[in-house]
Every structure is written in structure tokens, then in C-alpha cells.
Length: 165
Picture 1 (cartoon, one colour):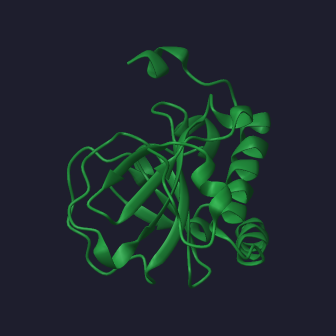
Picture 2 (cartoon, one colour):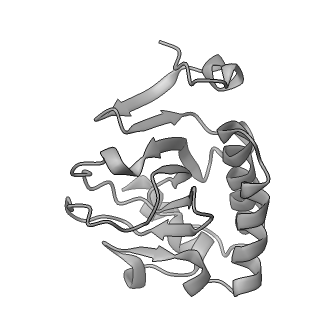
Picture 3 (cartoon, helix red, strand yellow):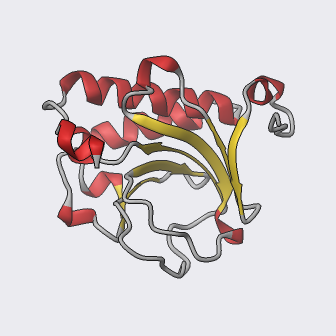
């Protein structure tokens, strides 16, 4: 089944991976980041209910211009008004690759942290501006995938055992 997103026919060109609680729409990543990214996604944060644990890192942009890193979740959690905004676009990393890409692990487990608290503020601001400059979610998704590609090129090797678990 193709996932049709309003005003973005090019995002509907690939089959949907999953629709969860109608708040989240996922799609396959581009081939150049598929070793690191499980999926790209977009959603409405005001409609999120109780996310299930997935042990994955997500990096996402919220319509207010903020960037967030969601650490691996070990249990379900109830949203409590943070991050701000409603509309968001993000990428979910494959299990085991987050620590190599972002240089953190236990510090973000079961937490959502503004990216400018982890990265130099200039780096977070530049990426946020690139995302805000995109007029469609597909462009934002591609920009996030390019950012992951740049992180992967500079990252320490991924623990292959962690990928197999």
C-alpha cells in the first residue's frame, strides 16, 4: 500500500512501512543511509498516545524550528507536552548505531533532548535552518538523511554485535 501524503506525491512513490495510531507515518530511507537509518517519518505530536519501546535513536525537527534527539526507549512513556509544536519530521536510526553517530548512549536513554544541548549550538542551528528552508516534508526528510550520512562518515565504527542483537 502506498502512503499518500497531502501535497507530496513524491513521498507516496514508496510503500509505507507502518502507520501507528494515525499520528506517525513512516517510509523507507534512501539507499545511501539504509545501513544507519531504519526509516524516515513524519507525525503530529499532538496525536501521540503511548509510544512503544524500540531501542532506537530518533532525530527529529519540530515545526517551531527545534531539533530533538530521542534516545533508545526501554519502556513505553506518556507524552507530557514536550517537545513543543505539533508537526514533526524525523529519522529513526537502526538499533545499535546511535552511540556511534551521536556519541551518547545512557545520557539519552528514555529521554528526549534538544539537539543544541548535545551539539555545538552552531551545528544544531545550521541544520535547523536547512530543515526550515525546505518547503515540503520530503525535503526535510532528505536533509535529515544527509545529516545522518555526514555523521556516519565521521563516526567511529558501529559495534556489529550490537546490530545483530
